[in-house]
Length: 221
Image 1: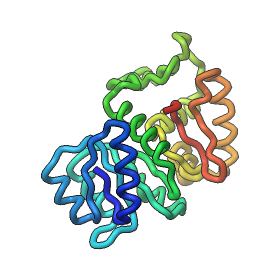
Image 2 (image 1 turned 90 degrees about the horizontal axis):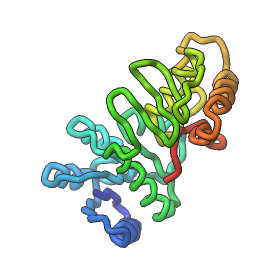
Image 3 (image 1 turned 135 degrees about the vertical axis):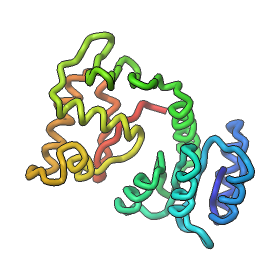
Image 4 (image 1 turned 60 degrees about the vertical axis):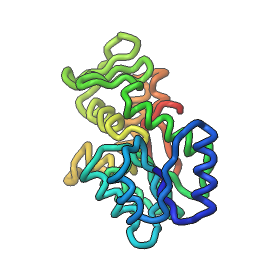
């Protein structure tokens, strides 16, 4: 379901998704989107923020009360606070306008693969290429070889994988992994990321640096 109030933008995005063999349901505002969501079963929601009647954040919040369907938010605003709010409300991806429909479709495809489990997840194991994170054993391995991680390195890796594909600010990572009362600064995050990448070897490429924003964990679409 595509929720976008700009007619031309909506048609542009819809055409590209249909070209890639997607079925698309369109909604021009948040109210219609919620009515549509109650009537049909959708596998993915692409959601604009700035809309009349009911904004995208409100729609995201309401959908999350009913469903865990993957949600991609698109917006012309690039504020970190907006991004964090979207993720806190349950969005899975964030795409800033002007956007490339090709990139949007690629992200949608990757998100669907993850939600359907084709990345290789189950209750205890998270599998990304040669990297396996065993949550029940609090351990990680690459190509079958166990990696020696400190408790904080393991917590950091687990936190990154938990927020797969999401851009995480250094401050947000610091607060979540080290705690709000931690007296260090964001350089602690950078140092641990560097060590973690080194220990993961080739699989360390999944930890991506996002210039002026932070980090995200993601396999290539």
